[in-house]
Amino acid sequence: MFGLKGKRHLTRELGITPPVPEPGRHGIALVACVKNEVRYIEEWVRFHRAVGVCHFHLYDDASTDGTFDLLRNVLSQDELTVIPWKMRMRDEECGEHLNGQTIAFAHAILNFGGRYDRMAFIDVDEFLLPKKGRTLQDALRGAEGFPNVSLPWHMFGHSGHVERPAGPVCTEYTMRVADPLRQHLDASNFKCIVDPVEVTKVAVHHFQTRSHGDRTSNDAGKTFAKKHRKAADFYSAEFLQLNHYYAKSVQELKEKTERGWSFDSSIDKYRTKVSATIKYIEDNVVEDRSMVDFIKNNGITLIE
Image (tube, rainbow, N blue to C red; front, side):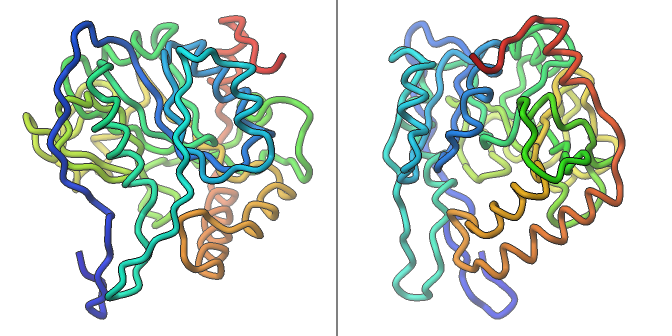
């Protein structure tokens, strides 16, 4: 893959040989790269465990704030695998930074994928919300049998919060961008849930499988080629919705942009992107209380 000036962009996509399915493989595992998320990680793992995730494969990007000490008190050894993932590498010839998430996702599939029916690849500010049924397994029946499910970001903004609110993220933020597939560069994208023993190509936001190539399904079972996922007809959140709590409060967004992104070589570029994205979200919001209602109706405890 080459940029406009011929500069090569590396590890945006990785080709792999799918892992062999292990006897008795079952369940849904969640894969994420994590760095210093002690303020947010507990509700994230408690929620996803409550909706059916059986194991968390977390790639630790040199956390120093006690994130994984907390996690080991919340999850058992049978539920958590931690992989040290302090990775800052560049291609020696062109200087391009390698994409650590892509490599981590490929590593997870190749080393652990044979154990599970499905693997989901998201971030700690993203929540998989069942819209039909109580669990992810229930919700995935809408795309049953298809090995590559793409879920569009439902991007949440500040919801009126200037400072960090006292309650959990996924109940305090209820205002999101109105059209998840609107053609805005940084406010419209997907995360995926895949059958790991089918995957032949890995990227952060899309996958390919040996049985269906680059075709992917929405949560209701409608399939499109990857390049057509942003068509209006592909959109669905009937069975399963991906909530992306991108901004949180004004205070937290400021802290986020000052830290920069773990796998971005340019802090200024990252800050500009975040600023444009949150402006677009805040200018185009609707209320969405589906997560709040789900947690209340199912008696889910997010913080203990």
